[in-house]
Amino acid sequence: MAELGIKIKDLFFKNPVLTASGTCGFGEEIADFVDLSVLGGVVMKGTTLKPREGNDYPRMAETASGMLNAVGLQNKGVTNFIKNIYPNIKDISTNFIVNVNGSTIEEYVELAERINELEKIPAIELNISCPNVKEGGMAFGVSCASAERVVKAVRKAYDKTLIVKLSPNVTDIAGIARAVESEGADSVSLVNTFLGMAIDSKTRKPVLSTVTGGLSGPAIKPIALRMVWQVYHAVNIPVIGMGGIMNATDAIEFILAGATAVQIGTAMFIDPAIPVRIIDGIDHYLDANQYGSVNDIIGSLQI
Image (cartoon, rainbow, N blue to C red; front, side):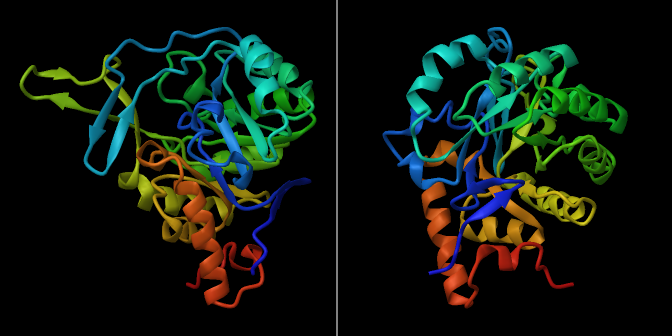
């Protein structure tokens, strides 16, 4: 049996398969369908300093080979997370990672400081790439200078594993990755959703209340795969890949392109147990091709 364990900085993951933020709540929501302790990690839904109502409905729309969402980081805030959610998940044997969001650098920093105090949360995913909020979010992730500023500030306040989630809605994603690496990111995760829209031809109106939203699902996989490959060759820190991963073959392609780990997102809405099958599929691929460890195939794309 091949070794599936991977490391990001000093943090060990029993396998390279994680859930993507926004697709499984805080983990509790899918616990009836999948043993969370089997997963490499659970990246929980976007969390903010104060409660957020999110955007008006409708805020989700099905598209060809994907979906649009404009949820807008609806959550009850970090205090509610600490009091009512953290006690229920802290003893589950996997890595729970908080997806951290802010409208200002000061909010990011304060939120990171609050999470830093939680013993059983070993990492945060700093979201500088959400396309569905009016302030903050993607605004911080579309230029090297702004990305550097927020990562530098959070790095000073947070001493555990820092993953920075990158936006694909940029001209040079490799440049953004190098910028956040230079300010102390331990890893980058990519890609977040692509900015898109849907129109109802009968009403001649946008389908989403926000007009635009984030596109995810199989439709974005080829572009996400290309971006992961580019970033892998641009930085020296681990890359976490995501974007349209629906099965083990998809996940293996991301690993070959340079991803140390992968996150499963839209597929979770079809079947919350898909990550477990992906873990089994990666294991089978490694055994069938006589690899001793998943680390042997990271970035091993032959060109």
